[in-house]
Length: 242
Image 1 (cartoon, rainbow, N blue to C red):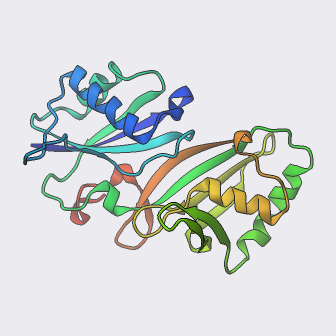
Image 2 (tube, helix red, strand yellow; image 1 turned 120 degrees about the vertical axis):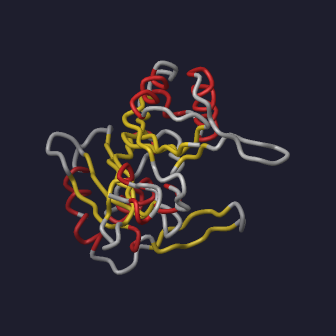
Image 3 (tube, one colour; image 1 turned 90 degrees about the vertical axis):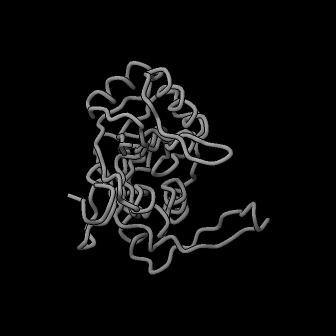
């Protein structure tokens, strides 16, 4: 049995298909490519594949990760080529690497941060100056409280999102484009849309969902010194990481 970590992109119209549908896309692609995916044991076996972190509906991504196991040993370049031949437009395998088959850590388990861009596609007007000028005082706040309706608790729930904001900056003079690094994974996760809504609320600018395009640009784990490293450097166990 071999264990792999696949990095792929998701762009264009296919960004509107759900996480569950993405899982079905890959299951079909593996089957059509003739890649011998391993299955779990038990009464109801299922393919041993899993995403590092679901991508929000409508988001594009330059760095999604899929971990999977096969019963046949394949070359890493071979897997990417085989999958790309069977993938629908908008999904492209970027790289694939072997990871420690005996390692108990998964990519999803070690995920700690993710980087994104947020592109404003409406009319800038005075919004550019108002929002960009608000970044420094916005991040200077000790607490940034966001209110979100909880389906489980059936009420509005407050949460402090400041601990999960690691960086935020405006990165383009020609268009309103923001870059950010946020918490991700089991230790604490923040959706960039929530953060941008709070930034707009802070500077009293109206936020309209359809005017923004979000792209996940990378995912990270923390190395032994607590430094963020791209997830495609994850070796499958703490001892095997680059």
